[in-house]
Image (tube, rainbow, N blue to C red; front, side, top):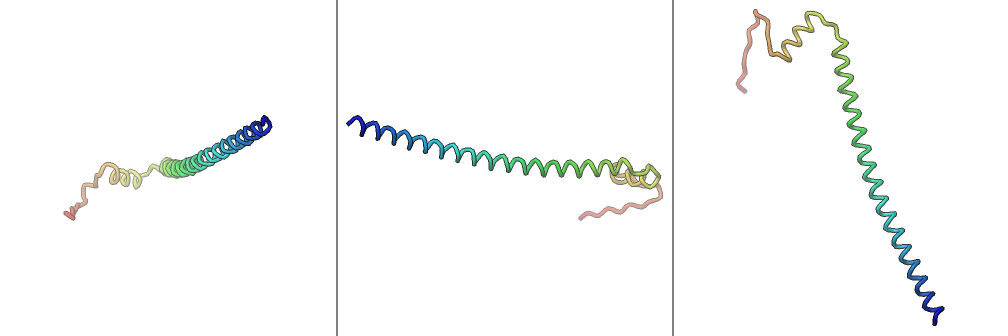
Length: 91
């Protein structure tokens, strides 16, 4: 009788251990997928930041001549030359 009871307890313990192992594997798989998604998002953010950095570096390396000053004044400050006629469109 003791042998049967100990055999059942052993099988139950092994079954419980197997269930815990499966649960742990599933949790680790979910965490792994989450970390992969986070790594992909971080990679995209790095690419965007590098592109922005390259654009800013290109602007800094640009020659500081009269054409650049006029372009900058038009785009950033919305200025125009004194002899220019500005047309506004209501659309």
